Amino acid sequence: MAISKLSMKESLEDKSVAWMQFSRLDFRNLQAIHCFFEGEDRKYYINRIEDISMKPLEEIIGYDCKGKRNVIRLWKKIKNNVKYQSVLSCFFVDKDYGLNPEDYDTSVYETPCYSIENLYVTRDTIKQILVKEFGINAINSDYNKTLQDYDNRLNEFRNILAGLNTFIICFQKLSASLDLEKFKLGDFIHIDIREIKVLKEMSFENINVYYHTKLSNECKQGKKYSEENLQSYLDVIGSVESIFKMEFEVVNKNLEKLSHGKLELYFLKKILENLKLLNDKKNYFSLKRDNISLDTNSKNLLSNLSKYAYTPKCLVEFLTVYQSTESESLITSK
Image (cartoon, rainbow, N blue to C red; front, side, top):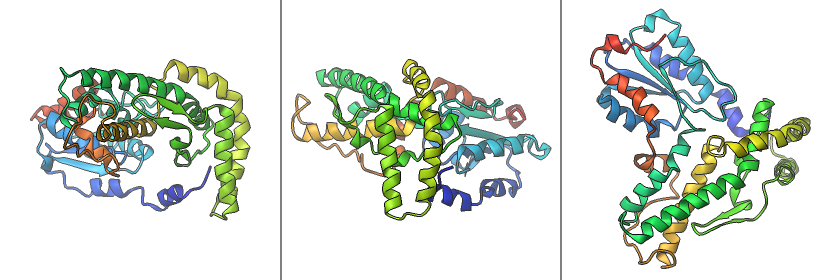
């Protein structure tokens, strides 16, 4: 397994913090909902939990579990403890690539796509941003033109990124570690609302050389664990190559479902940056739009755009159960 600053940080963190916070409560208020999140996804879920369950914020208690595995671990721990049978608890996890399905009960919500980031990249999202941030009415020709271009670019993006998604899936299937942060998409593509320029094709050969070069450069720089990381990569890359072609065919048939959420969020960020730039240059819309204050460079992009992100029907149905005031009828499956 590759070693990185992130993996070292995670190994040093107390994975039971969320459990300690939960288990030390007195649970006098049986109307409170205890919500367990992977991490930043709370920025997407909290408002929706509040709106759909119609519970006050004081009765929505969130826990950052620092990863999907920890959410699942706590779900199993809580559902098997008779002490918490009358406590309202719900768990939110990303589907990821769907390689390791769990037999969840009704207290667990799993995204219908890779992760919640994919829900920020829908057509519905860009519609709202155009109207509410850019001030473009739905009856305006700029509105339909931008939506059509957006749909085309997103489809192109998913096709272009199929190789990288396949590469990641191969590593996951082999239970090998791959540091996605090392891939700078700007080295491979340039995103414009009018076209996407491919700077470097995302073939197995190119991705392999790119990542290998990154690891080798870290060795030359003497970075901690760099030699171990390079050797781990060399040990598994042959097996990755042997299954890449088959997995690539699967990804190509399921581009929307097998598209990494963080990669798609990068696409949205670049499209919005480009629209703002073209607007300033009067080089896309029929007229220059004023007072566009959308901050696409914020590290808090998930919060900033949360109100525009798509809310799937399955999430509404999941949270609607918690609208009842009779806590006895809301006990999750344990």
